[in-house]
Image 1 (tube, rainbow, N blue to C red):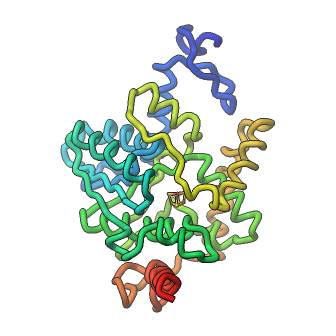
Image 2 (cartoon, rainbow, N blue to C red):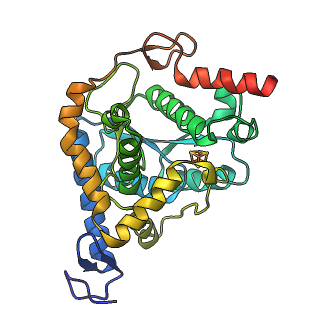
Length: 309
Ligand code: SF4
């Protein structure tokens, strides 16, 4: 490996998209400054208050939590609450939860554990075994967002930060364009409009590639859960992840370009697809588009029917 382009020390990485070799210290500095810039663009931290951070114990959420904690630590008016969702995936989530919990204990952070099994009456493993047409991930995503939003709101959070990285966002852009789902593209976060009952999302790792999130956690010595969910193979997103990796082999800046393109289209998309008014779901009270039952409740009813029938 060559020397760091900033100080001449041995480099630990070469950022292909930026054409730079960096040593550990300068890589950490660069990552933190990019994350802090993303936070400043999405939220006004000077107002203080509570920030909720969704943390599974995986590399992205642990990196996100670590940088956010370091960013707000000097501020006495800001409180961080960490939310971990237990989806009920045996042999997977039960080994990541202790990592998140112990990290919070070590740094004196408030930690909240929610359980999809308790909230929805069914675990993700039961969903996977129910023989439904949709993948377990379709249910997992909806119920996890439901759970995180409720826990963040109950904690009085002004923002809910998630560990979505650059690759995740680029995959979502690619997937929605390939499916022709322009409306969903327009609704990708982070959101600027505050809706009643919905805690606005922060995406601090928005410009951090997955591999750099991993390297940051490694260099900082942050413990992470490094396993794959047993239901991942059924996720449609996996195909787009593979395509994006292939494209990035030849064009290292392609993920940045996809997300930047989406950002440039966003003002026009928001005119065509203005934010949907949210109303409380008649079953659970959580914000729901339109007047009927929210997606989390209709999915729960569908799974119960499949399991009971
Ligand atoms: Fe949930 Fe799918 Fe992720 Fe597993 S791979 S945690 S089921 S979204």
